[in-house]
Length: 618
Image (cartoon, rainbow, N blue to C red; front, top):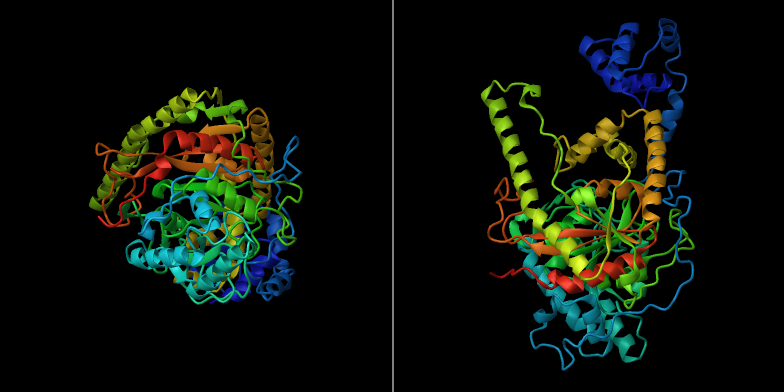
């Protein structure tokens, strides 16, 4: 039998490491018990890979199979860690992009009067208070950081057995930070609105002295002896880290090595992902705020499922140093909170260059002004995305007939899921319609807008290729088998098939992305904010272009809501249903978070959905 290492050297020498050839040829060689690659194998592989190769070239390839093998092997020997980025740097900036370059003093909203006469006797009554409210209580010494920290630590311990949102409690660190915060505030050294407030970190942020597991089996004991830049900046702001919170394994979904993180509104459902723990813990009133990350929906989706307010900042606004890399050209870090202004206060503490993440725009500034007159903003809405779907139904005749009992059952289940999704979307449309009516009633002049048409889904191969490279050694060593989820849409399978994307096609997808960025940039040039349904095509588009998004709760499904397609505990189809949140998304210009948040805050204050919280003890 042909040795696999020798085989891969052979394919590398052919210059075929980035195409379908290695997988096809390896399968053929093993099946035929061959000792070398033959001309016939190349012909078969070329047909499958759709790469035309002339007869003369096939012979030439066979004679020079090992020319470049040593180079690939030498790179493998470097054992490149996940923290090393490619030499190429992605920037979302296009021609005409404008942003603030001068920093102004932050203007928060007026001090809330909720607890002006004192704090409640039961500190748990403060669990769902906003960052702005808690900040005022701490600043005026009506409550201590130590008291808040102990309250949230107890809640984390109390609800984690049900919600499974904690990877590691950072109790010793938290108590030391809280004690220091109280001492500084007593001495008149107030650092700002996050001083003394307990928060939780998605466990892809490195934290010195504590494990950073990335939520993945095989990494349960991983120690990264540094603090991520975001952790350092929140330390500097005086915030208190109380927990490393869960994420789906390697930032996918809500399934991690310890189980399924739950939705506080319906604990039979997962919290979605991959910022599963941050959203669940924030919604459950177990932290004042949290930090999540998004590559393609990982703040948007769990914020929707758990009824949180989540901000996905502009790509290149918040440094990712010390965070697990999945896609160097798409990863973003951002806050998950209970209110829009909370997101603004956290963003103000974590944005800006750190001298290490080279994607961060050096000159862009964030200037939060709670008094900004949002009535003068230019606001659009994605008209077609708010309308009933016009997608044609797939004719039954085009589907292969189901003949076996297994095929019939599978077809019936697929139809059931499809119908349940259709019914849920039809039911949820009333929330979208109501949001447009409310915005108009507020005096917002909504102009219809449409995103330019491009093959956006085809560009997702950029993410998949980069993710496969980020975890290349995991795949080559076979350690990907340790990951909990092993389905066709899970990372292990994605990492494997992405290795066979041609390098040329990756570059072509990147060039198409550039065209899309320019076209989308022209759309945003006419607007300050664009309103959209959360799970429309804009989710893929704006993650590719790097535009910021604010996701907020937009109502709760009533007792008449259609049930989920599946009621199985934690099932993928167990989504929606009575009592669960819906969401709305506000999109902004690159580095235009201040205006985006101003309008979103006005809408949130006018609707009040963020003030509702799950009843965890019923």
